[in-house]
Length: 505
Ligand SMILES: Cc1cc2nc3c(=O)[nH]c(=O)nc-3n(C[C@H](O)[C@H](O)[C@H](O)COP(=O)(O)O)c2cc1C
Ligand code: SF4
Image 1 (cartoon, helix red, strand yellow):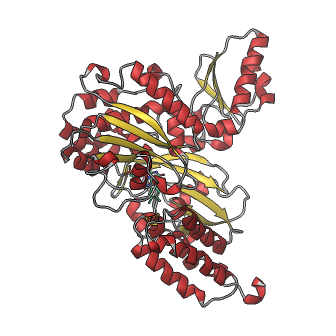
Image 2 (image 1 turned 45 degrees about the horizontal axis):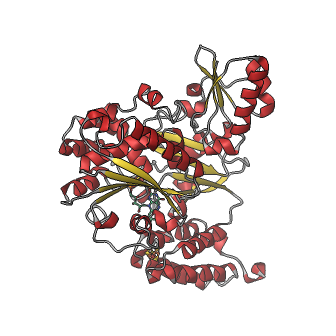
Image 3 (image 1 turned 60 degrees about the vertical axis):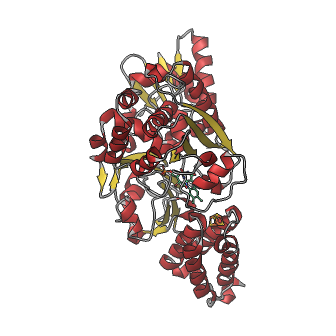
C-alpha cells in the first residue's frame, strides 16, 4: 500500500506531519506494510491534509484528514473524494507548470524523470543558443514575477552581451500578498526549477545560478538545498551536464525579508551583500547585473515553466491563452474565500468566473465587495469589472494589473478606506528610501487618508494629486504602483471615503 501525505508547508500547517506519523504508527500496530511518500500539494488547501491511498488500483484521495481519521483510512471505511483529477476544482485546470506538483516525490529524480522531467533539458542540450532563445520567444512566455516582460527578449539581451561570466538569478522572494505559487513549486517539484535554470544557463551562456529565496520559507529552502545536492550528485549540475560537456551550477541564497528585495536591482544588491536599495536603470541587469555582469533575473514560475515549453514545444504552450498573454498562469486564490488554493489555467478566464465559480465566493457566504489582484501594488477590482478576462493587457485596460496572479478576496464588510490606508502604510514601511515621491509621499499619503477618515473631504483632491506624483515620479514600482490600490479603492468605493465629521468623532 502506497500512501501520499503532502510535505508542503500549507499542508503541514494544517496537520500533515501528525497525520503522516499517525499513519506509520497505526500501520506498525497492524503489521501493515505502508510505503509513505511525502509529496507536494495538489493546491486545494481547504482539503489539506489531502491524503492519497494507492492499493494498486490508482490513487484515491481523502481530505481533510485528521489523526482521528487514520484507523478508518487504513480500514478502507473513510469516505473519500475519488481521484484528485476528478475533483471539480482540479478537473477545470490546465496544468503545465504544475503538472507534476502533488504527483511526484519532490526529491526523487527518477520519479521526476518518469513524469516528463529532463525531456526538455535533453532537447535543449541538442540545440544551439539562438534556437533555445527562439523557442522561448515563440512560446510567448512573459515574466511571471509581475511586470510581464517577454522572457525570450530578456534572454536574448544576455546572450548578446559580451562577458567572461554571466549569471542566472531566480527571484524567489515572493513578497506579494496572497501569493504562494513559487513556494509550492519549490516544495513540490524543485527539479523543474533547477531544470529551467540549467536551460536558461545554456541558452544565454551563463555557468552559474542563484536562487534568492525568502527566509520566511524554511521548508522551501530545505527542499531546494536538498534538490541541488541530488542534482549535483546525479550529474545534472556541474561541469558536464548529463554528459553533454556543458557546465552549470547553482546555489540557494536566503534573503532577510524586505518586500523591496523582490525588486530585481534591489535583489542584486542584497545578493552582493549590500543594503537592499533599488538601483537606477540603465544599466539593465541583463547587461550589468550581479557583480556587474550580464544577468538573467527571472521569477520562479517563469523559470519553472521552461521545462514544459521544451518538453512539449513552444507551439504547444503558445496555443493556450488570450491575446499577448500566452500559455497558462498559476493563479493563487486567497483571502475571504471558500475554495482557496492554486488554480492553473490558460489566460482568458474572466475574473468573475474565477471568484464566484472556481473559488466559490466568500467563506463567510456574504457578497464579494472587492478583489485585490496582483499583490499589494494591485488594484481593487469591484464586481462591475468581473467580466475582465485574466490577461496582462486586459487588466491594464481596466486600471489593474495581474502581477504574480494573487487574488485576495474581500466580502461586503471590507472598509476600503482602511485598505487604501494599509496600501500607503505598507509602501511607507517597505520603501527603500532612494527616491522622494515614495519615501516621503507614502508617509504624507497615510496622513492624508487619515484626514479623509476624520471627515476632511478637502483632502481627497490632495490624495489624488499625491498619487499622481508618486505614479509619475517614483524610481520603481513600489512607489509607482501603490496609487493603484489607493485610487481604485477611492474611485470604485467613494462611499467608504465619505465619513462625516460627526461619525468620525
Ligand atoms: C517592489 C517590488 C517587489 C517585487 N517583488 C518580486 C518578487 O517577490 N518576485 C519576483 O519574481 N518579482 C518581483 N518583482 C519584479 C522584479 O523586479 C522583476 O521584474 C522580476 O523578478 C523579473 O522576472 P520575470 O521577468 O520572470 O517576471 C518586484 C518588483 C517590485 C518593484
Ligand atoms: S519607489 Fe520607493 S522602493 Fe522604489 S526606489 Fe523609490 S524609494 Fe525605493
